[in-house]
Length: 398
Ligand code: NAD
Ligand code: MG
Image (cartoon, rainbow, N blue to C red; front, side):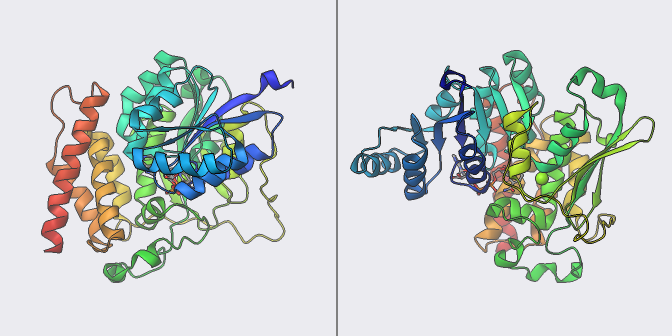
């Protein structure tokens, strides 16, 4: 490959767990990829170190004061990266004419606008930021279609499903009977549900199989992560809620499965390492080295499966409830959950109350006519749902 053929990659959320894993994979393939832009929320020193290592054209931070600090750090080191500030800059960079591929690795609905910008600009959009598609729903998929973007899943379960399906999306509908998303069950799979009121943030973020950001770690403990993934799968694979099933598989070796019309089951397996789905999204339809260890069949434990108990994991079942409730309900559920998780991490809400806040917000707050038709409307709905959840949280902790 000549340097002219290098794919220019923009990494949104580059200081996070997915962001750093993405940079790790990119660093293995300097002959294929060039880092065009990096972005972070607040960790200026880490972002500066990434800029010095990867020499991107741009770095983006939400706040002007943080951007000024980054500029100072980079100038002192003679680094020519141009530093931009603000939410609009994030969307502009994601849609920049020179960008080929965007890794969406921001956490939460905050990632929706740059995802839509990348989709409308027809980029290769590698989606880790599941909240963006849960909030965006039909609007998100329309942006992908209208922009001619290539949407590639990074969530390991969705990457697994994607890897089990042929490249021609037109054949998916006739082929799939249903899909089975696997879930590890998180740190509390065997804990007495009655004792979940005492769970601390430290216990909740200690995941048995994956090292991840704090928000998704709490979501894995409540299984709201799997709930968001059910909704994500509905959109990525154009399925009905009934076509999406979840099974607990504590070893996290089978990353998910497709059950075909003829009952043949296709599964994707591997060591639990996010660099595998990241590498596949980067290189699709080719395959490149990811840095992951090979799966050792002889050393590994048995593959076991369990039902996700509704008493222990009531949050999971809110996904189907939200999907059936119609447009906008999934955005409401996501907003409530983001607020509840933030309150739990700040020790302002009990672990077992997260689901209560989510359920009550979902059932009490409804989208207004036309609110789901534009990104502004969806963000308005998101803000209303957050206020509703905050009021519930305040009442619970009073
Ligand atoms: P993280 O908290 O480690 O990193 C989040 C990144 O986004 C950071 O770089 C942070 O600076 C940036 N960010 C946060 N809020 C922002 C905002 N408001 N505006 C701009 N930037 C912001 O999270 P993570 O674990 O890397 O997860 C990122 C996304 O990927 C989440 O949506 C998560 O659900 C999804 N995901 C993660 C994993 C995993 O293994 N970590 C697996 C599957 C999916
Ligand atoms: Mg996942």
